[in-house]
Length: 291
Image 1 (spheres, rainbow, N blue to C red):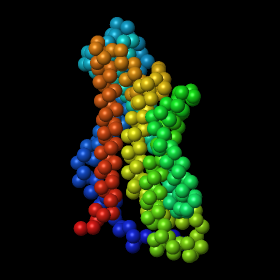
Image 2: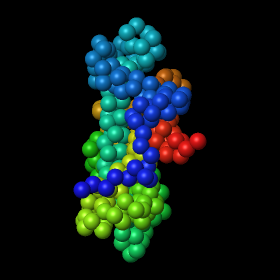
Image 3: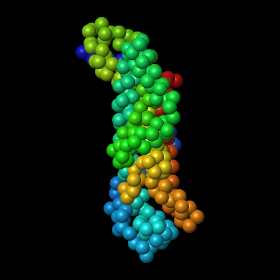
């Protein structure tokens, strides 16, 4: 028999949360920007008469809005828009996949640590501290140097360096809930620890988890761009926003749009997800219901 927690977490309708989110103007702008980026990445390649690998040597380094090349072409005559939209599929997919993996791992670790506390919690949190003490960028580059780069492996590497923040958040939330009346009642009814942790406590910490997951996507996109820019990430000819920036380094003077276009895409994606995270934090904040 499930134990409800209406006493602790005020009930609210989806319409109320949505209304609070809609009042956050930057969050709405971020949501619109992210949706446009996703739509462009999904449908954009099909609307352009060139694919990302089509080479036209006669149109090398064509500037933006020259003919059918709305974002210009690169030194091989490949359409920048086609590559940008296809790269968006890769970068956004890597960000979302890394978010899912890191959120699951971080939530499980944080829930177990926060519920049991004591030695179990101390050991798990010291492991988290150990990962956090080592700069994530260096850890990521170390892993990438020993593993053959591919979208799947880059996603796994980003997830391996991103779950600790989620674990910290969940651990703190679970510790604040584990001595509440509904948890004690569930324990007295004989429910197993797994059921208490994942069926009774975890639903009450989903707000912070959702916010952390949204911010993790932004961080994952930035990390993918960073390691691909350094040459350790997703490798050409498969485009990503990061390796597009890498390939544009030597053409900053002659063809600056090669760096500006993917740079703007990364900025919009990261900023948009950060704004969404801020809006969700305010919309899901229980204290916002207390006047």
